[in-house]
Length: 288
Image 1: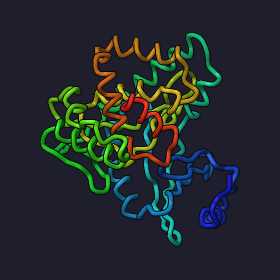
Image 2: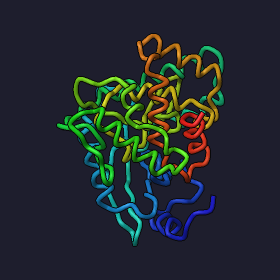
Image 3: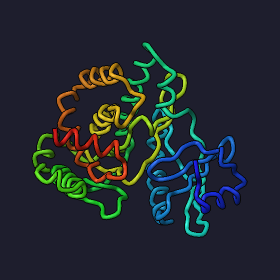
């Protein structure tokens, strides 16, 4: 992978080789700093305040995370070098779940898919209290007193950003098809396989507590985790994996919400023109 001169300069400062790259996603490049720490270099345009806010959220979630069977990120240091900001964080155990799935079959694979959904469902146990529904740290966050109002407004924003093709999709109908929680609870909303690490048949860490995290209905996390097993989002997932996920939803009385959640989350991500596979998936769900 070709790295920008800015990133190469940061790596040189920390005496990190380019081949120490562990991965990259929508928010950052991640490099191994040593056996116990990582260097997380945020993408251009990220501010130091963004990292401060992320660190504060992770710190607030840490007490609840200590009770979970998997780890979440933590921030040790925040740095700004020229125009780029970065954090130093503990290195979390495990390997990317999509890579592990490629090496796993049979009952062990089915158990890993169930563990993936269990982990997504467990994210709602992260104790966080806010007097509203909506995004926790997103720029121009939508926050409402009623969850259905949040669902409508966020779907409408995604559809508008998606362009004219989505003009006839009614965000009110999308929202009305989803359940209403008793109170605001933590929702990761991006708990797909690429944001989880695994080892020894278990989920060892959940990553990327980013700008899409919100206060809402915790059922959205296992529902969207099952939805994200579509080939457009998780290419290493199979039809058998999706069947296991559907069975898990049935066992947890969530299957009735799968289709409504799929349509709403497609509207949510409809802004993602820069991700061709994801954008085309949104079109396939909403315009079919």
